[in-house]
Length: 333
Ligand code: SF4
Image (cartoon, helix red, strand yellow):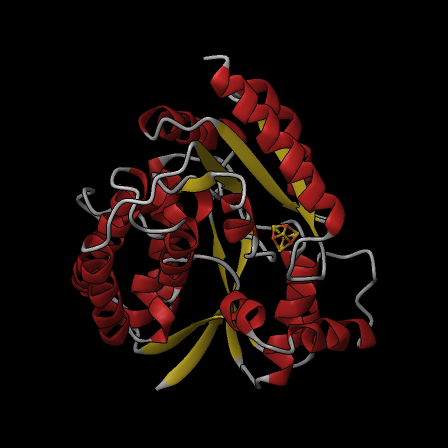
């Protein structure tokens, strides 16, 4: 089976229908014990110090693991992708372009998906068959999400991990399904472990995954992971075709479109406060200005860089923020 690397969520159904083994490069990077070596490789090859660590890590993984073919999302994902793609092409990596259209209409999404299907020589019928199968697994992820925010049984980290992994289903849909079913059933048997402060996590998935356990020291837990949940397409399950599913996927589109769903979830999940995570040197950090203005719950922006654990300053800021939320709750605000 041929392997194809992805650098963000793309229509995985099309790649699976085309017979590929799909590997999310981000997941290899962030779970590697020696993840820093991938960043070092990129810097040795000329990537600047002042460049996003995720991007450098992805480059390092692609080169180090001998990945010969990837999907490059040229629009709607990351402003640095075009430059990364140029360097990869120079290194003879095959790049299959995909775009989330900036002009976000159902018609444009359809054109983009049809082009992608054509590139991989698959039919809509084949793709819909795979989508149906993927949706069976996504339903289990939706259960785990519900076990987090409704029943308080799944931890914020579990919620993050299983949903973020659905970008490539850990490269094996059947095994991933078996694993998440077992996990869901185990979580469902637990006693609720609700905390006083209910947090939402928005922004790119964190380098610093210890944030999930750290906030628990202050009687707080995450009951919503925005982008990770988008990767798991909870609404896509209900859509009648792949076009609607990818039209309704919020992450690649403008901030106002994302905010509609974020606001809805803040209300439904009774979220007290939001942590907005951004990555150093990422253009998305600027979105924080709009986010803080648009949301009517307190928002704390924290920034990660190369290290995969929270630094002392960020821990202090989180502690002070959670103290404040605690006080506000006690005052009944
Ligand atoms: S964190 Fe920002 S700059 Fe880095 S890969 Fe993601 S979108 Fe691109």
